[in-house]
Every structure is written in structure tokens, then in C-alpha cells.
Length: 221
Image 1 (cartoon, helix red, strand yellow):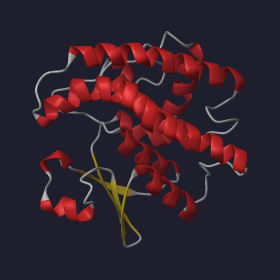
Image 2 (cartoon, helix red, strand yellow):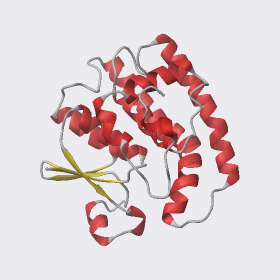
Image 3 (cartoon, rainbow, N blue to C red):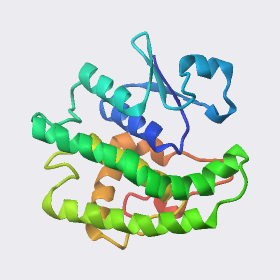
């Protein structure tokens, strides 16, 4: 059995969940309160972060390394393009969302509104929330520009770049922090990816003390 130690509203964990589900691999989800620095968990990943995946007798950390391992072991359906150029563009966008978007948006909105409360770290910093709300507009516009030229973010096929972006956006959508009316292209893209069977478990997530908006699990939002 594949086992994933995760946090439901972690975009890095959700990216791994989407990759595994797209490849129809059954996985046992184990919620991990990683911020408590439990000794057993630190033995699994001394970095003290999720996701951590147990698979094929290995214990693996870091979402990108995990996803690339899963891709190599289970190449169908592919989440990385066949060409070097396509793989480059996919990896570039994966890094864009996991680095730039995460720093400018996810950490400013999701972590302030949700993680601080869950971890007992106090109230949200209003300056960070305002900065995140401003920055997401730029990213929506950039995604809209990409999708004006392509069927999916990295090209004509769905890739790990789409799952990475969708993982971040699904977390923010859970707390109603995405203005889907800003870009019709982005809204259509998210509706397509949200309708995939791989997304079902994400849409069923429920975080205590945080109720998602009605449109969160609505495929025709």
C-alpha cells in the first residue's frame, strides 16, 4: 500500500495526491501535524515537512522529487511532455507556482488565514493578506495570457504544471480567495481540471473550523 503523510490544505501535498490519482494509484492518506515536530515523523523526514510518501519500500520527501519518481515508475498517463522543450516549460511553470506564486500569494493568504489558526500562531497579518490579494491578480493575468496561446498551461497537453497550479488554486478556492471573474480563460481551465476524476478526493476535503464556499465542490461553478 502506498501511504502519503500530508496536510489537506497543503498545495505541495495536493500536487502529489493529484499525480497519484491521475495514474490511478491507490494511496492511504495519513494527516500529519508536522508543526508539532513528532519524533516518528522527523525520522521519516528530518526536514520536518510534508508531503512524505512511502512507496516501493522507500520513504520519500519533497513534492517535485516525489512526482518525478512517480512519473518514472508509472509513465502512463504522462504528466511530463515527450520533448525536452516541453519538459523544460513544464518544470519552469512548476517552479513558478511552487516558488514565486507560493511566496507572493499562497503564503500570504492561505498561511495567514488558515495555518496560523490551526498551528496556534495568532491572528492573520493584515498587511500580508493585502499583499497576497494584490499579487494574485498579476498571476491570474499571466495565466490568462498563457492560456490565450495554449490549451493547457505548458502546451497542448495537461501536465504536472497544471496540477501544480491547480493544487495552489484549490487551496485558495477553499477559503474563497480567488476572483474567478477576473479571467474567463483561467476559470475555464480550472473547470476542466476540477472535473477530472483525480480531483474528487480534494473536493471532498473538510477542514475543521473552516467551511468551504458552496462553489468549491461545484463542477459548474
